[in-house]
Amino acid sequence: MIFVTVGQMLGFDRLIQAMDLWAKAHPEREVFAQIGDGRYAPSAIPWTRMIPPVEFKGKAASAELIVAHAGMGSYFTAMEAQKPIVMLARLEARQEHTTDHQVHTLKWLREKPGVYAADNEDQLPGQIERALADTTAFDTFSRFAPAALVANLRQAILS
Image (cartoon, rainbow, N blue to C red; front, side, top):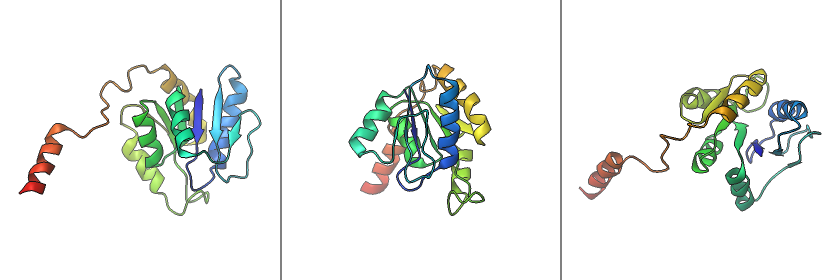
């Protein structure tokens, strides 16, 4: 299952419309979307507006792939679940957010293992295919801080 999420604060119609088109072209793939308060209601994807936190984690854990806005919460959810994530930034110019901070977040995350950055909705299909084909994305990911960092923090706190 591909889990699509727009986060808890805003709708993201551009992402949901693009994923609805993708799902229509790939009926063999199961897709589920959390669409927030967006105006567009997908026709090819089962969806809900919001998901309780426990159910959200369950969807992420059972997903083959997560497709989301370029929010840090989505990134951490995917990495904790050890799932690849395709990310599309909300744009201020399209009134999808009040700033372009997601553009900057995506620029920073794009080289991280397991992250597939789509600079626009036309790039989503290619990035989805790349993410689904990549079986080595999490070989280097750790849920924990490096031991050296923990040791330095411990020393700073205790001194």
